[in-house]
Amino acid sequence: MQGQAFTDDFRTQFNLLMRLRRDVRRFRTDPVDEAVLMRCLDTFRLAPSVGLSEPWRVIRVDSPNARAAALENFQTANAQALDGYSGEKARIYSQLKLSGMQEAPVQLAVFCDDATDKGQRLGAGTMPQMRHYSVVCAVTLFWLALRAEGLGLGWVSILNPEQLARDLRVADSWRLIGYFCIGWPEDFSDTPELERVGWEDREDALPIEVR
Image (cartoon, rainbow, N blue to C red; front, side, top):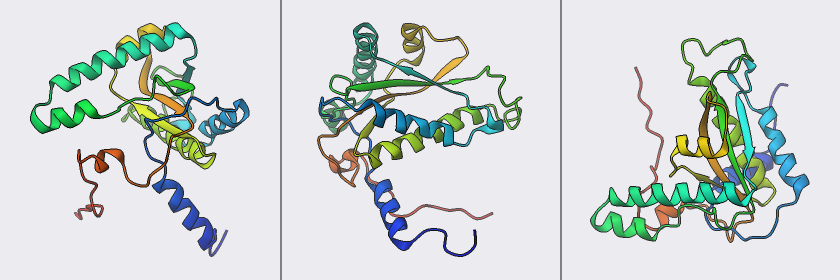
């Protein structure tokens, strides 16, 4: 295709989609339509993956026992993280809502299968971490698809990944990429919550070095 591939209006809307993507921690408890969720999950198959290895492994965390274990994991890790701060940072941290695990109707644990034979190790021989990056690419497409449907995603990283893997009884070769809460956000903003509460500032421009 030559020339302008997309319209100015499309690019404007795409830019808005990225700005409103946001990491969501505050969810309504309304259920998510299964067809909408499956449509968004299908975007995993559109993602690039090193050697076409498609190393993503998705666990849907539905049972009360599995959710309780994941929540306890987060609460333990979160308390340990708070102990690592002091003064004003500790005060702000203690007031942050860092997961929507108690409200989000859909919860997923996404892993990378480091032992997959698919792809024949192409591109991953010198950089095996490319499989992990491939899963992150897939998650990013999924994230944008959810937002386009009006849904939100919260990425919970304050967890013990080895404990979660044991609790979910996954293969030894699987490595946790992220635990994701999905549902209808209470609201959307184009400003990160951590910026709004004074935890950190976003860079005004991308720093680029030239060699």
